[in-house]
Amino acid sequence: MNTQNTEKQQEELQVPTSLSVKNAAQVLRMPEDGLPYLRHDRAAELTLDAGSLSTQDGRITDFSHDESAEIRVDASGCAIVPGFVDAHTHLPFVGWRAEEYAQRVGGTSYEELAALGGGIAASARAFAEASDDAVLEQSGSLAHEMLMHGTTAFECKSGYGLSIEAELRALRLAMELDKQVEQHTVSTALLVHAVPPGLDADTWIDQVKAAMPEIRDKTAAQAVDIFVETVAFSNKHLEHLADCASEFGLMLRCHVEQFATHHSVPVAPSVGARSVDHLTFMHADDRAKLADAECAAVLLPGAEFLGEERCPRARELAHAGAICVLGTDLNPGTSPIISIPLIIGLAVRRYSWSIREALLAVSLNAAWTLGLSAQIGSLEVGKQADFLLLDGPVEEIPYRFGRNPVAACFIAGRPVYVRPDAKERFELPATMQ
Ligand code: NIG
Ligand code: FE
Image (cartoon, rainbow, N blue to C red; front, side, top):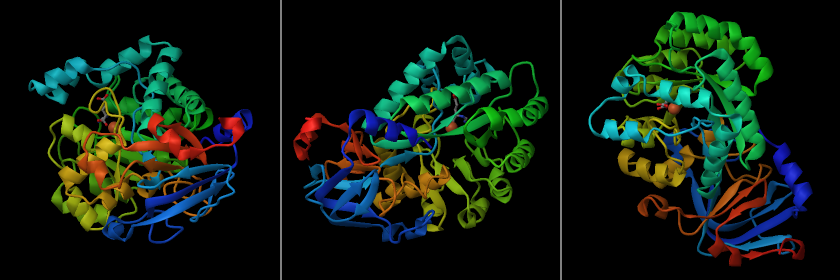
């Protein structure tokens, strides 16, 4: 987690250390403090009472107004919610694949495009041809757009390398991106994404196993990830990767049941996966196993919508008490989406979720998926003050579908984005005017 960034900028910009936001119409709080995650059958317990919030030295100190704070913000008519945590993105990447999207809309499947050399292989070629600066420029600008839409922490994945050397480069660029952006980032080594040209899947897994010490020593990866699918890898490979993850003290994430049922869900939680992601084709018989597990169900409604995939069993998973999470899946293939408000809008409509269910899935539970829920993901005294000022009640996020409600975004108690029309809400010290 990038903590240096905040300290560095507070020093350089002489940012005041206390801030207070008063009179919000809603403040989103968890039912108790200290929860690592909250199962979704308890989402109705999230509270949205009117209130204020104060911070000191980057942490939340109180839920009352502090008139002596250096920055004072009038939040009347607004909602205060935790900064959005996007627990599934494929940053850093370079280039787009709009022509593939047009082909998919025209009826060509993702698998057919992959067989023709498109898909992940196409983005891997773009990544190989681009300079480090070009990758960082595109990725940094996407991260800035994400910030303006309320994302204060996000996951980075490698996966467009398709060789050990190029995967190490992707993870090094993720570390570089972390230094350049305002947000906290957590890296995942998606080493098992597509079978590299000229290799078979088993040979690639052997190479990945051999490279694990280098991944541990030279990168900031906190997790490994795998794509289990007919065009990619199998449950057997998932089990091999689980062994690597536990040997090297990394979390295990996995892309599963995206285009077909492979019954990866009972396998992944039983080998200790932190999350199973996509789940569009998860079999009904596997639902109870996931709902009871300490394994997040990461749902990606943007990829589902743009891929015209069927709806996952999200309503049932929430009802059964799974640890549900929403993410953008930001990537150049299946989901070129940066906006968590848009993802909330899709989830509420397609999954028949309440706004509390959707907000829980982009806050505490998303932070837990990244191993960060002791620091961020909920508004609690002592936690890092990452929060958003929304320009209306939270119920308007899904209802005014496609609109960005973020009026201001704070990381570690520092305003890192303020929409021009929200500036009049701020009372700043003379040094900041
Ligand atoms: O999450 N499914 C595998 N990985 C990505 C897609 C990657 C790509 O097509 O570039 C996903 O959908
Ligand atoms: Fe993905």
